[in-house]
Amino acid sequence: MPRLTMKAALAVTFLFSAMTTAVNSAEIVSFPKKDWSWQGVFGTHDRSQLQRGLQAYRSVCAACHGLKFIAFRDLMDLGYSAAEIKAFAKTIEVTNEEPNDEGEIFKRPARAADYFPDPFPNKQAARAANNGAYPPDLSLVVESRVGGADYLHALLTGYTDPPKGLKLGDGMYYNKAYPGHQIAMPAPIMDGSVEYADGTKPTVNQIATDVTAFLAWASEPNMEARKSMGIKVMLFLFAFLFVLIALKRRTWSNVH
Image (cartoon, rainbow, N blue to C red; front, side, top):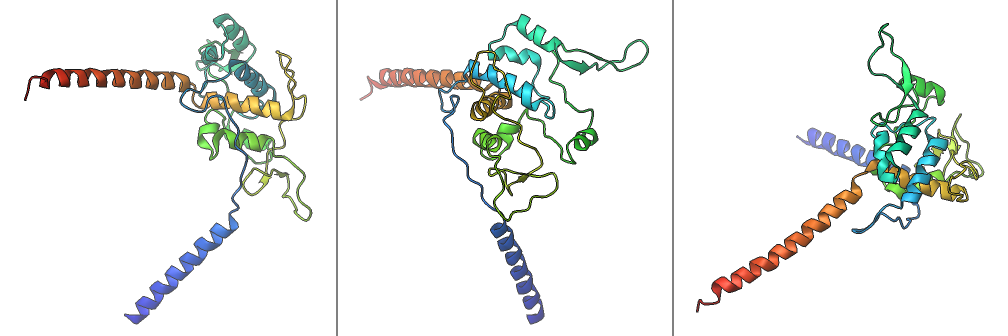
């Protein structure tokens, strides 16, 4: 019995030591919180910002990162007309799901009902083109990352020279917002990386802000409709509550 107790104690001690080491070695990365337009109960997206964000995504992100859960027709929510979306989709090639008469799978201009294509045919090709790292799809990146939009903006603007004495791994870059600070993706944004159609000055911060807003919309494109429905439901419930109170008073008014 004492021998079993000793083994159990050693096991607990080892587990606690391992957990403590892991906690101590994991650095908590902090990043500034921004005031985004869509936050809060009544928050909404800035359509001009979303359109700039789409343009930034196409210019600096689409070559490596897909957007597989967003269809071209969804862009109507950004303020584009059906004709504009049709014209935009035609500039992008997608792989046809059905073979042609010769049994060959072929590429064609996208239609409004198509989804944004993945830039690589498979994960192996994506890793081969990116020094072994797999570029994640960005459809849900804001919702799936701790810190959401704040983290993504900090990541895009967090590239700096490494501190003295820190040796980066092969093919790695220093980013102060990334956990561990070594990231396989090179800085995707520089001043002037995008030529905005509306004339906005394309600084690193501006581009990062716009593309983050666009990807926040992509992660939850029904956010505004959900908020609107929630407000309507709350107003209905309050009105219904007042009706119930009036009925209760009327029903019990003659009861003594």
